[in-house]
Length: 261
Image 1 (tube, one colour):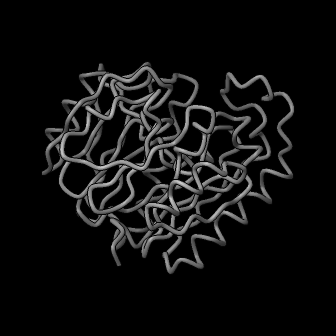
Image 2: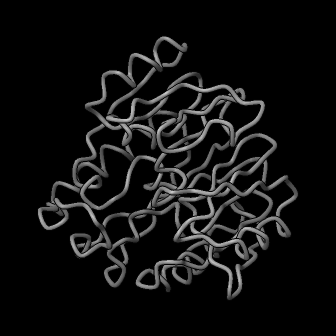
């Protein structure tokens, strides 16, 4: 399989999800019941893609915990447990550690980002040989430096003006990145090729490569579908309206267990 992971972790939405941290003007209209249905559809697509899906229980005290990519970077050899820049989410990483201890055979040794460092998974873009990390309002240089000390790969910081780096780009395969050039400078990724997302469809840049050319994207972004198809990919769409309202997307909702970490 040409993807970087064969196992992936998800956490079910809590009943309190509508209290999540979000600047989206539609946040107060989050439908938790619909969000749970959309999450089930999302998980079904992952399973249909021959991924081993590790389903974790909801955390009622942490409304944002459905965004499972943020607390840590997971690998078969080692995991880096982050430290949230968003103070309201601190404590989620402890729940993740407790859950991961049940899956010792699936994930590697855990390392921890220490104060004053902050590191959120939404700022981390993993490729075959390089990890790019957005220096943002949620992730600082100390956190990036600690990550670089922990992992056996090159780590390159990128100044990010987006909420998270992955709000503007996602890794596909074969040194190709799905990217919104109006949000993330392509020159930050020397040696890579790109499939571009129009500025007005920026939400579609949060995607998940499922292997064998299949790319999971949110529904409703026809120009991005065309650009992916023209580049030889097979876009699969799923409705994420309730997670859009919560400032989360396709890549936020799961944490791949990377084979190259």
